[in-house]
Image (tube, rainbow, N blue to C red):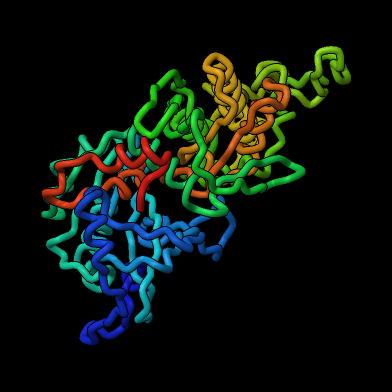
Length: 449
């Protein structure tokens, strides 16, 4: 049974599925007329379905990575006839709604799937299967499917999506969708937002409406830092080109890892002290006067040159360095066994580079929050992936530099902010006389669902 078979409520395609849906009452109809806007998504009683592997892992099938943290919507009764996709430089993130298999009750769940962007055709094949099964999944006809697209790929692949799927494709602004998605998670989904530390790995923050202002640090291929003052008030105040794409690219060169998750797995088992120069390597102990522990990184990859030079010298002294073998002695090239050549383990290199990128992002995020007087910092994007070392590094950086005055927050669906924002922003056809999302947000500090 493949991924798509799992989407079907019945193994017998000839058997129609009956959903016991609640009748729409007059008050709901009146409210819809007065407040036209998004397709009705009922988040009452919503919860995250905890099942399957840990946060850092997904279930791979036919090159689709289906997350194991679906969001259950037990009171959803309205038909949902759209899917949303956020196509970034490295990953394409897809969100879609499906009814519960083998159930005649109302309700369903939001599903989360990701693909590598360079294999976008596999993603489109998956979406085509969703379209064909649309009536079984959601009760709407395949021709009624609408695709909400955001991210740079929404423009790059726009014609391709329309050509393959033959449905309406609506492109939405990337930054706006990120904010809408994050606001949705913060205000509506229990056990979604949390703080992280080694002593308290996952401390959940309660969903609340009073959330502004805050800083969103979205870490994808690159990094964007966005000051959010309200639902429609946001400004990109900075960022850095050293993000997930940097880590992925460099580790592709330095190790034998072929996927980002494999790189994170290697970092999990690495020891950066064999690669990085630490404060203890310089002082022999802590530098307590300025608050630096002996394990604090003084220089990322600071030991490499000395060890590389020593390896080359030993090879030359032993007569083993000839015909271009200097590169191998340097320890910078890798093989597919997971170990770098020349004395540096791929696991150690992976952890060192992960720390270097994460520390850099954490310090820039702190400086931006300090400059703009923001106390709450939310880290999103597919770079994090629930990876404990990444979260601990970012959290520690914010706590250290702010002396505990600022908080770093993480999300269980951190890579899907844009896709979820596009999903909940869906506007029914010909209902454009009011921008209800923004008006309702301004008046209530949250979306009306």
